[in-house]
View 1 (tube, chains in turn orange, yellow):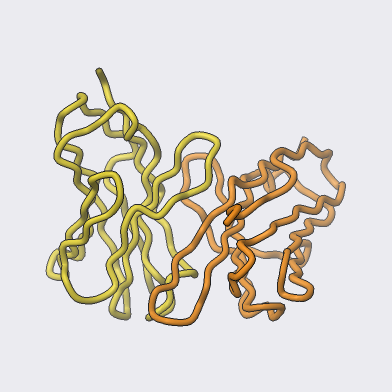
View 2 (tube, helix red, strand yellow):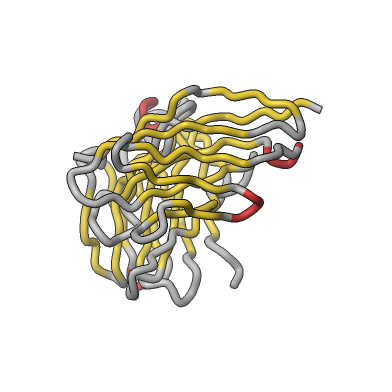
Length: 115
Length: 115
């Protein structure tokens, strides 16, 4: 069990550029979640997948945001035409959803700074 | 709708003193409640969770929390603080009954431990 891995750890970009983040979940986990955390706040839910199917997207996720999980393994989160308000820590978490014991395992996050 | 309020964004205790971090929630369904800890430059880690059954829940590192339905509270305690407990603590409630992945987090409480 190598844990949830997120890359890159830090991303600095200019306003208007596109960025993509990657998350590699724990291998046997069937669910993958994306959260966003801004300074001084708790994480906010963005979207989640069960295997390759995206089951829900938060209203926080504007049409500039897109997430994929091809083949039900790793996931990518892309932000198009970044804005300064997108600056945040983007967290990925995975879990095994089955019996009544779902538990999230979080990665260390990708810190995005939009200049 | 679900929500979480953590009372106090910063709590400071002396080493060996009682730790008490407060959390109140609201939920339209029987809640699943969680406490997560975030150490600097690390991902969130589950401390403990309440789903059903015993209202006093024991977690890792000597922490415990008690679910009090009448008070809609889920306060986190530890009898004796250790320097290594210094971190950010988040209380969370599940959005979907019987699932532990889509969560609403409180804004967090930063715990400082003085020698």
